[in-house]
Length: 562
Image 1 (spheres, rainbow, N blue to C red):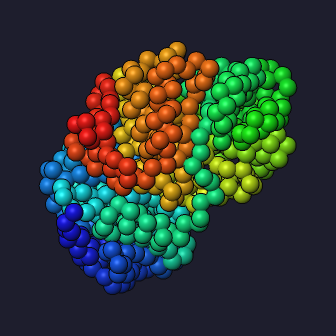
Image 2 (image 1 turned 120 degrees about the vertical axis):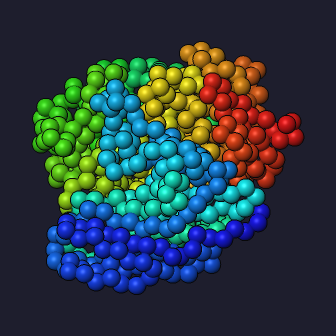
Image 3 (image 1 turned 90 degrees about the vertical axis):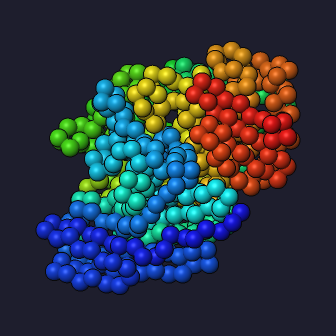
């Protein structure tokens, strides 16, 4: 690949406060009545690092906006990686002239808080693309340019490519924050090199700790039984894998064991021996038992909401904050105040019970986005999210954490595994949710797009969870080529390879796929190249593959077969 010139360092900084809008062209310090802003550049072997700092003249200075801008003109053939707000948000490659659609108005009350739809200052016009925490710029036959934040525990970083204005704008998600002391508001790298070089450099600059967890395989109850689980269901599936002498690293019980979302220690009668007995049965097979929790939400049926209404977050109108709607949970579910000392004491005890008393070694943490829907004058979205995850990591002790439904960069160095795409569907696509323009929708197509965009996080920030593969014939409407695509792409790009199938039902097709998995599992991936909106080239140390993701189906070919 040829080198292309990095975006120049001639950035313009802007900081808007009440009654003030100060602009700084290039490096240096700009002093004004309410403080000073300082823009510095530090050279890096692959590019450079930019920091924008603000020193307020007095405490409780509220920020209206903070940004850096750079003249930039992208060609229509360029590719831009648009990382979505959280795990489920569809994240993939787009051209500069494209747009990221807004959720349809009819769906806003039900799904408006799942992603970034409710953030009013995000532009979704044609030619305006945005990406959270990091983005890539690729020109044909040139090495990638990575722009990646080092500041996501202070404020999320929002990269916006504005084709119509020939501008790249990098904004700190700190609007409304009352700053009380000097703070770095933007801090990011601009790097050019191979995918390995730039992502390794990003992880190094973040000072990522050594990964605790290894690539793993397992089973989860969700994508076969959903909330209709029982002690018998778990035992039957466990015995099916034992009978085939197929060892699993994890065996996870998902949503449905608890009487209501939020009431984690209140167990349904479907589990008469209790959750400790289930963990012991799983561990006796050699697998680590896993359990699903959603600490930042509670459904309307829960005893937790009845007993502790003070733990519910409030929306902009001061009403209990409805974080979403789930018919399997009886309807509305609410966001909890994870900063509340009462909630923290309660959830510390939940973790102690689940990990120490019951014996679960893998905890799946879901619907985490609800903790940071609304920032406060005292804390940004990033601070709310980071503090929650730091607490959960501490309370979990030696158990491994699997993050899901979370802003990704918040979990760097804290999660052992993390979901990098949406929930897959029992069909290729959920057409109604696609019509709603719901970017966090249950969708096999959307999940595969995100996996192809976010795969370089693997082995650097955590172990990638691309979601499950499903090969079974029953209770599934995926075509054979779709099943094979999901399974093989997950095998190549994922590091947590889960299924929800009952292995006792497997036949020739499934055994062939398992043989393929054994051959390709943990193969080194060199790169993923977007060829068109529907075609991708996956390059590995053992051979290359072409992936086709059409709206109605998808399939994979070895490059030698093309």
